[in-house]
Amino acid sequence: MMYGTDCGVAPANAENRVTGITTVSPAGLSSAEVHSGMVFVPGGTFRMGSDKHYPEEAPVHRVSVDGFWIDRTPVTNRQFREFVEATGYVTFAEIAPNPKDYPGALPHMLKAGSLVFSPPNRPVDLSNFANWWTFKFGANWRRPYGRGSSIRGLDDHPVVHVAYRDVEAYAEWIGKALPTEAEWEFAARGGLDGAEFAWGGEFTLGGRHMANTWQGQFPWQNLAEDGFERTSPVKAFPPNGYGLYDMIGNVWEWTADWYSLGHSADAPKACCIPENPRGGSEADSYDGSQLQTKIPRMVLKGGSHLCAPNYCRRYRPAARHPEPIDTSTCHVGFRCVLRKRN
Ligand SMILES: [Ca+2]
Ligand SMILES: [Ca+2]
Image (cartoon, rainbow, N blue to C red):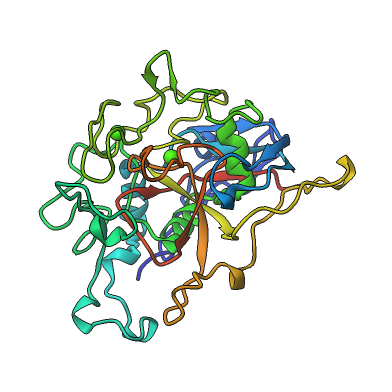
């Protein structure tokens, strides 16, 4: 793998006078270039989680985060292509799995590929996700729907089929980091503390869809009343109160926190509110039902175009989902943050 061998050199310690951020971008970008396309989210204390939905979102508890910069949109195919062209990076989905990492796997399944949503044409058992997910050989970020597909015309759509190490590699190259779950949720709320949705208390605003989700009966009836059956261009829906696009819907987004089954209790006093908290431990992030292949899991946030009222109502800032670090799919992407150094 050529990643990291031919990175350019950024102006040494280019200082951003507004934030005090010092950037030395491995991608060879100036501080101004690194910050373009980002929004500064002022820090603060907010109510993280929800007591009204899925158990893993509870309990609501107060959390403080320092201010940080965050990408205005998910990383697009155009941006990811720049990274790959500059570094020769090969994504996880483009490499055949090592049999040692997957004891018990059928040899004919150990080929490069990724999970693609393959909708059935009739209602199916919702307890078995194999009814709509297919591991397609040859599917990857350049061929999001498998062999024969391409990203032609999708430059402004979020990159998908990126596993955790891929998004870490991109972040390192561009000189940024991945958000913690608390940072991500604070940013997604757009200043509306405690609101159910990123835009307020109702799912639609005056009948207008505010994010790319799924309308109709999942997984067989995709009515696309929001205009999109699959991914959408990253600015197709209105931004939230911080000017951030697509925090909710379109694609799920990786965070840098290990998954835990729920949140900590609220602090008994204001003095004890956690500052810049991190998620659970790697050891506790495993899926207890998958004992043979133990792959740790990170937190995904925001839901995707596949989240539907009848299946996965996770198109909310509080929603969270575990994703094994080796898994890539057609509805998971990411965005980056930049923190003050002090
Ligand atoms: Ca949609
Ligand atoms: Ca999103």
